[in-house]
Length: 81
Image 1: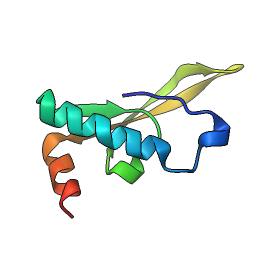
Image 2: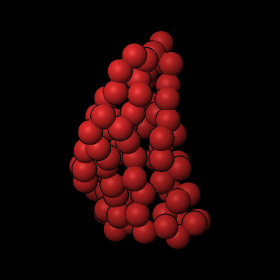
Image 3: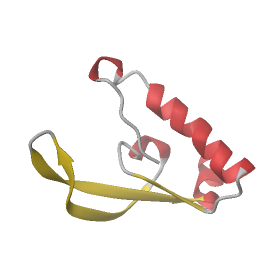
C-alpha cells in the first residue's frame, strides 16, 4: 500500500483513517494475510521489515525506503485493543 498526501493536509489523521479502511477491506473482504506499506505506518501498528537503500528517486536524489508489514492476525489484535 502506498500513498502521497499534500503537505497542507498532513498531520490531521486523514491518511491513518483511510489506511484503516483499506486494511479492513484487504484483510476482511479480500482475505489477504499480509500487507506492506512504505510510509508512516507506525500509527497503524505495522512492523518494520526492511529498508531498501536508495530505492526511490525523490526530487533530485535517491532516498532509502523503509518497508513495513502487517499480518491479518496483527490487524485483528490491534482492532480489539
